[in-house]
Length: 237
Image 1 (cartoon, rainbow, N blue to C red):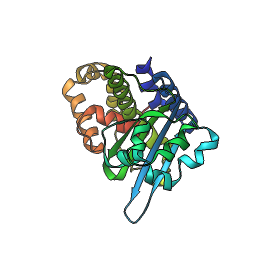
Image 2: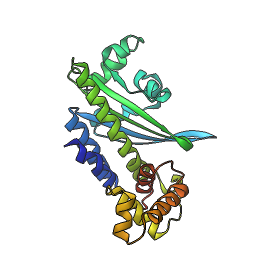
Image 3: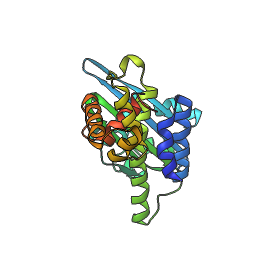
Image 4: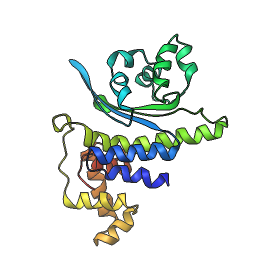
């Protein structure tokens, strides 16, 4: 079930569709609330934040205040690290911030998992899922939850950058040829270079050349990364 959610989030065409996919994923994972934040750094100005969530309306404003973000140990962890954090009341009380946990616990934010992806050119993506009930006692179950969240975040951040970030802050869209775009589309469908060549009536070597050119234009190290970036930039669907 989750595997389908990984790919459908990439197909989101607008903010509402993206939010729906993120909420659906978190609930399938066993969490009631979710927050996805895209951060764009600016060298000479404050960073910009673009968020989607399903937080209770009474808590949404407090949740997104800069003061709370600066104090919150979960957000501070994600700001500095890419390693996911599994948090609970103890995460806050150990730093003398028990009152902050008490405030959010009223709205169901008692336990959760949060992670951040830090990308080139000052782009960041934070994804957190939260719930009232305690986390599983079985370490293998927690490992599974964290792995699912990490994989979904890889897909979701591409959609978030494309949908949530204003056009003026979008990265430049490189000009790919129709053949390069078609090779990326076929690769997205799981085809090998040989299969792409067969489908397009070209040699395998030519298919590889088109993919290499696309990777170079997109500044990607491999064809799978190129597919994800092309999706994020809206070059392919």
